[in-house]
Image 1: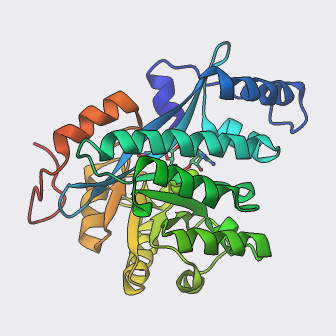
Image 2: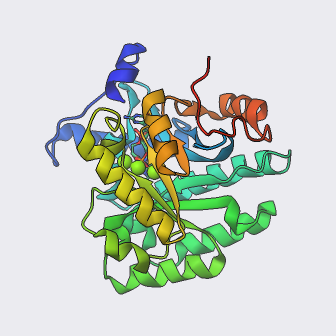
Length: 291
Ligand code: C2E
Ligand code: MG
Ligand code: MG
Ligand code: MG
């Protein structure tokens, strides 16, 4: 991803890796201002059915245009925010922005669910389910219009508060997706005990799928298991036709990646969705490269 944006000429800023470096502390201060100053924007990346090409949802991904440092990727500032109280403000902002966008799409016939990434801290207390309940109600949206992406580590944490909040979200009817699957601690067996409806296979296994027998075997066994549990599988980091075709053969449900589309600003995403939404099955043989 870094290389890709570097190629498009956007300089990426990477603060000193030292946790307490002045650069990082400065950045945290900047982030606080960025939250109010409109420097943070959501980009949207579609999730595409590998068998039909139809669009099943979009993931909201945060982008920060820093006035001095330029584009700062979430891998730099989300972990920073996670170490502070700012994370909850950040998530509150993301949820509100996603719900607003969702309402604009939903009420003009683009019924595309939006997935939002959340962090461990967001599951502390009842603020998140409350914000979602109020927001969905205000915009007249069904709970299934939004989905929360959480990582294994968050979901398998045995803190009571995490489980309480997850129960509240389930009661509300907001679906959960397990993000970055394969990189955490939980085994495939534990999957069935997690209250998720979607499993996103980490891009590190997907990207080189077509050239690596090991990756092919890993992804195939995840896809099989996910299906046998009645859940939906999503492959992250689909960059080539060869990978998309192989995933479709395996029976993986959805794909997300540069092959289909990079994350786009809202206006561009709206155009992209309008063009494709409701177009129905494109090929009975599943994913086919465009010619
Ligand atoms: P993630 O949730 O696993 O998101 C997928 C990442 O893969 C995104 O990186 C996306 O831009 C990137 N990606 C998409 N297609 C491809 C592809 O074909 N190849 C490759 N190599 N990568 C692809 P991004 O946007 O830099 O976000 C990185 C991570 O930052 C996310 O990983 C997520 O964990 C976190 N993040 C992003 N936005 C938010 C947010 O609003 N809140 C929270 N808490 N975390 C966020
Ligand atoms: Mg995600
Ligand atoms: Mg992921
Ligand atoms: Mg990730």
